[in-house]
Amino acid sequence: MRAFGRGPGGWGDLSTAQNFTMQLTPVPPAPSPAIVTLSGTRLDPGVEGVQLATLGFSSPDFTPPNLSVAIRATVHHELRALFLPVRALTLETGRSDRVLTVYGQFADAGGALSTFDITRHDYLQYAITPSTGASDAVASVIDGRITTGSAAGTSLITVSATGGPSVLLAVTVVAPPTEREIKRLFEGAMLRKRSVLFVSEGFTAAEQPRFETMSRDLAVQLFQHTAPYDVMRESFDVYALFAPSAERGVTLALPSRDLAPRTS
Image 1 (tube, rainbow, N blue to C red):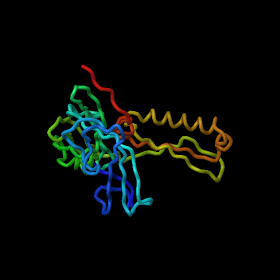
Image 2: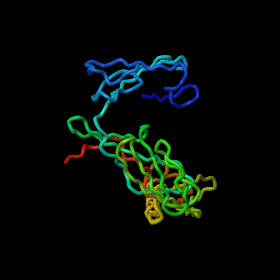
Image 3: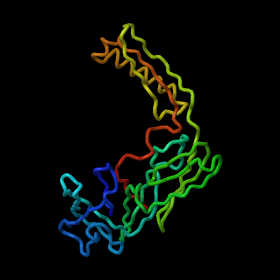
Image 4: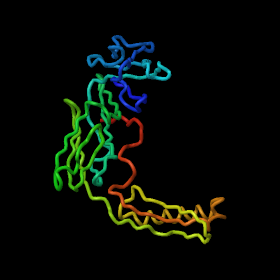
């Protein structure tokens, strides 16, 4: 079990910091035997179940020096399957801002299924197989973060759990657009003016008319129907900058929630 937090040097893995300790206090009724051992730092893989506990953190570098957090530790009987929010992904070259969300489907000894976000678990492994184009189109996948290279190409990313199931993600890496036109939507008449710029994000090239229509509608709503901007509309110039995105939407991850178990 690892603990992350913000210390004197910023955010990081506190579990390896000098003079850092963790102590587990079970919350009654505690299961027997307990699944958390070694002062709250490891889970016993031979015991299945759920344990509620309070995990205490102590370090002279903390202010205050002693902190605590409630946890629920769960050991499952089996990891049945891995799921991805998407099976194909298009990214631009030279990017490292995408984290590949991974969900795991677990089964208990009785066969009941539950699904959890396991994106950053240490037992996940990533293998990159180039398909076409540059061999390093997908440069690396570290802790789920996908980094693309400087040239276009396609690759397959195999996400697997140690000794368990796997799932494939097809990644297409394309060059980012170079020409980006700024269009004037509204021009005020006063000499001392301010500029408002709407910038697209998550709109593909085919959705440029939709983005510009939404920008014009927003400008009309703001400067004709919203106080005090309706009486100050001559004080503003409004522009729109369309920069097409390789993929539609703004995130790769699903909303943060448990998925419903699948039934047969």
